[in-house]
Length: 88
Image (cartoon, rainbow, N blue to C red; front, side):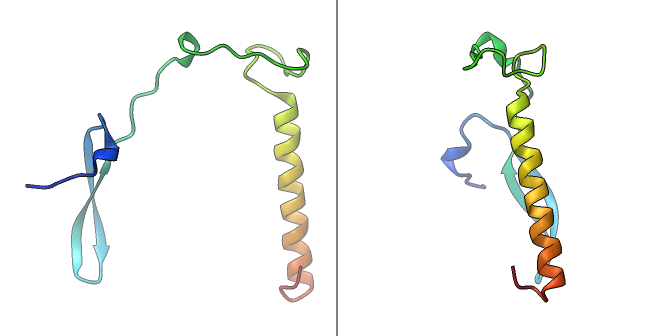
């Protein structure tokens, strides 16, 4: 009988085959839960109220700008590191 971590809670157990040094074996993990409409459990409020990119209000313009900034910054770091033989 297999024992699974109690942290998995109410999730079903999924398994997949993985290759190890000992050969092919089963890897057990908690399955992903089904998607649920969370709008019945939460309400999004914004400060300032005009920070969205439109409808639905869960789409944040400021967040996308922040993500784009981090992507551009990381690309610059990578290109600088390549030009400087791995030095930032």
